[in-house]
Length: 307
Image (tube, rainbow, N blue to C red; front, top):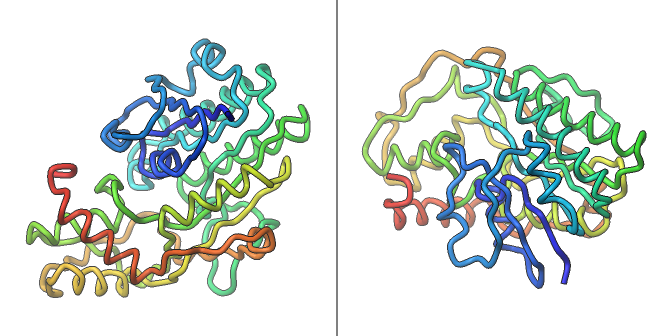
């Protein structure tokens, strides 16, 4: 049975990844910050270690013996990075380097580092492929770009078998209500206003968390060392278009939308070209219409989880 270590495995995407693993001996390492929640792993067989990926001594004890390490551990909210970047640099850059070093020393056969489309900055037309230059525009994106470069350096310099995945905006059940979709759903269910940045014209590519995790599993199985793989979504929408769909799904009207001052350095549009992963057999399975409907239903039926 394969032994898999999932860092950040109590968070939104990490916990969905753990839930999708079969016939594996799984260890979850998570610091349990505000966005980590052990309730996300209820009923899922795993061993749990509470800890920080910046803790080299802890990693030397935990990492050895695993066949695969998947790194979800990160500070990920752009607004928080604008307010204070230090923790993002610490966790996303230093933490990733500390984890990569522990994997190298332990001889881990395969590592997957999970990243984001935000490392590329903003694109007006077309889509980025994996060779596009990194031009991050927020402290969060810059810290993730630094982590990606460290992963590549460990592959090239040390021969560590590490692949990087980059994905668009995720949505689905159990997402902490600071990101757009769960924030809007939980506010609307309570009859509260939702904040729409600027003119609402910023474009994002949305992917259901289960499809994202399926892409990561494929890269874990067949991805090459030092390579980057895009995992694109199924819906490219402006934030205003998305707001309209959420209002409709929650039975609310536009009088609950509050236009607010735009975020500093707000990227206008993200778009990924995922032909490389599709050539390996990847196909998203959850349509945005189906996924959004099921997500709204989950928050409606699980108020105790978020309230």
